[in-house]
Amino acid sequence: MPASAAPTVPPPALDNPAGGAFGLIFTTLPALLRLTCGLVGAAVALSVRTPPVEPALLWPAVAVLTGWSLWYGLRALRHGITPALVAGDVAITAAACLLIPRLVAPEVLPGEGSWIAVLASTTVINAQATALPRWSVPAGLLVTATYVVGTQAAGNLTEARAHATTLVVQTAVTALMTTVMRRRIGRADQAFAEHQRLTREALVARTAREAERQQNRDLHDTVLGTLTMVGLGAVAGPSAAFRDRCAADLRTLVALTDSGPAPGDGPVSLDGRLRTVPDRLPDLRVSMDLAACAVPAGVADAITESAYAALSNVDRHAPGAWATLRLTRDAVAVVAEVVDDGPGFDPATVPPHRYGLRESIHGRMAAVGGRAEVRSAPGAGTRIRLEWPGVG
Image 1 (cartoon, one colour):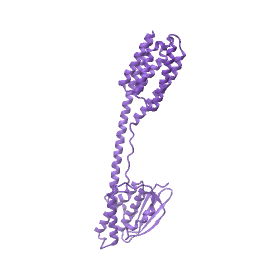
Image 2: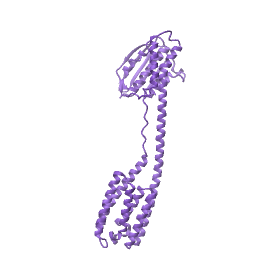
Image 3: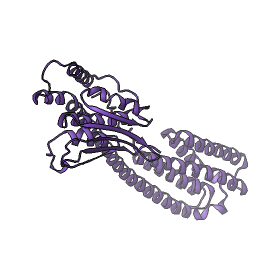
Image 4: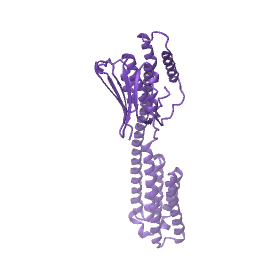
């Protein structure tokens, strides 16, 4: 890769964006649900303490459940929901269900509205949403079984059957829903990962192609141009200018094999670089009118080498012609123009396989987001306009 062509770095891959969103949602909602249930349940539990509720047992039980709800919520929001957190929630809820005869007054037990009934429902839903089915479904059935045992011990078989059915349905529906969502989200993440992979591969391939095209441009504008001059007999004998040109071509070949890091792309003086172009073509008469202008290094390279390619064409195809190199800028664009009074040509007749205009000028400018415009006609000279719309 030539030293002037900085490699394009592929964008970083995003790992499981859909799965990450799913995890965030199904961590935040269970945490908030547990916090709400714990705090409201504590107030409801302490509001009804008629026998056989035992206050000596109710107060410590409510304190433990409230403390656990706070710990569960804060831990989940900060670090996510772990299997240990799910197991602890199931264990504490199961113990509370077994103590229904001593924690829930008989008059509030029917109708699936007691605070422990709500606690049980919250636990089975959270378990299905935060754990894999092979663990969450048995956990839901365990909570259901302990609720049945507790309500039967309290002497309310109707409540045992009714809320047991509710808990089983909640377990099944929530487990099915989260399983389907995980599968769909997994497929979405796979499709996204494949898209990322194809995008990176396309970017790497495009970068490689651009590097190859850049090398071809450099070879065309230096070594191949020099060989063409020799083949056309333009070098009749020993020439200091020709030796200098060959030395410059050799430096280009060495640069093409340099695998070191590319230079930075900070602002550089474009007019300063353009002033050196005529020195590479000592036999061509060039006048210059260059406004001061700073652009990114890659853009300066593209405009400078495109101007050199245009002037080389004048030197090669219009011996004795005068050429003018101009540089202007405004709030919209940077414009460099190469104008000559040579014989001119018809751009429409240039064969597609000719590399000079297509790559050395149009290709270079397109690579940096600019454009080139060639105006010429037989007997009317040539004007080549190089424009980079990057100034604002």
